[in-house]
Amino acid sequence: MNEIPGLFNYWVVVFLMMAGFYVVISQGNLVKKLVGLGLFQASVFILYITMGNLSGGQAPIVTEGVFIYSNPLPHVLILTAIVVGVATTAVGLALIVRIHEAYGSVEEDEIHALDMADDDTRLQEGAEREESSE
Amino acid sequence: MLIAIAAIRMRDLFGVVILFGVYSLLTAVLFMDLDAVDVAFTEAAVGAGVTTVLLLSSLRLTRRWEAPPRHNPFFSLLVVGVTGAALVYATLDAPLLGDPSAPVHKHVAPHYLQEAAGEVGMPNIVTAVLASYRGYDTFGETLVVFTAGLAVLLLLGFSENGKSRIETSAIHDQVALKVVVKLLIPLILLYALYVQFHGDFGAGGGFQAGVIFATGFILYDMVFGVENARAVMAVAWLPRLAALGVLIYGGVGVYSMLSGKPFLDYSALSADPVQGQHLGVLLVELGVGITVFSIVLSIFYALSGRRRQS
Image (cartoon, rainbow over all chains, first blue to last red; front, side, top):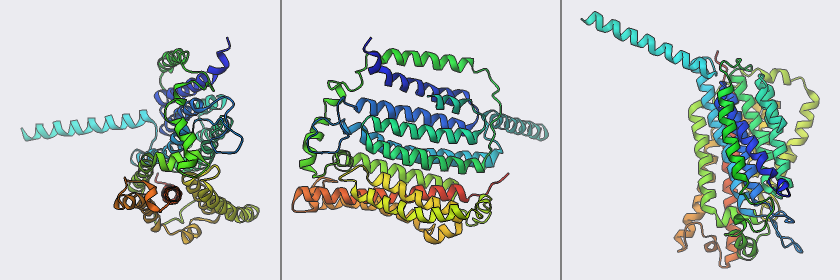
């Protein structure tokens, strides 16, 4: 039973990851989907930092009298990933803003319906043109 | 975790965004607890600060309320449940938290920890690994940030007419807020510079400093209006600054190549290798800082300057 505290962090990660995953696949609102991606992303960050932790360790800044440091490599990877994450989120937001300008909606269903309606009218126009040419 | 659930349940997107900010701040606290000071620092500045502001500015351009869900959530819950159960089962084989014999701690990390102080000559190992040992990665990531900024600018562009913003009028009467912000901004900028140049010794570095510096400008923009902020930092200069940052980073690499060393080998910069490493890390961090600052700020300008079209 003494494994439970050691694994607890992983379970938190799994829970958060699944929460983000659920938002991404089940919610229709595009802004909310981005927030879900953010949740997922943060859970991956926690996973990496958890792996880098060392019991009894200190933050990896060399000081006298300290011999155990946590692993600096995951820290480096996640540090850059966070900044890259905000940049990619911004690209997603820019796309959403443009979608909203084009469709007047950020709901997936409505956009899809508009697309289908658009296709239908185009098909009809095409059929009418063929009829008139015959 | 509770915050995450609340964020999912809420239909008011404004509340969702604020809760997401709180969630980021809590994550930062957790990182601090796990001895990752640099990461906690970045998460607090980026997640709780910049992301929230960006999400809010894009909400202004779209809609605040979410439509009620139309399909049955049962199927997605099932998928999520099965995946989650599989992942939990997988964690049973994972090494325990803080276990020193975990494979993560066996590969290159001990080398970094033991040699970094001697080879690169700086106490903060995270900065040493970031800028020196894994300089290629960091260069790539700086380029990704740069490209993402370009993509946002291509999609939205800077609007010339910033006067159409609505929220500035509401904030104009807040005298106390203006005084406090006026006092805070120099401190924020000074702190950003400290973080930038002290990254070798304590927590910090170019990524965090760029974000904090940009936060100072974003605050100024929000309180004093977009015209004032653009008078301080001209829009046309931001993409050039971003490119300059990347060029500084790449230039250091090309310089070391020209002097007969591999790309991004900083020991070429000075006669004494450790001195050269130090100088190289400083220059590279400066490049990263400039790029991150100008990209974050131009993304903010692009999102906030755009007029709502409905």
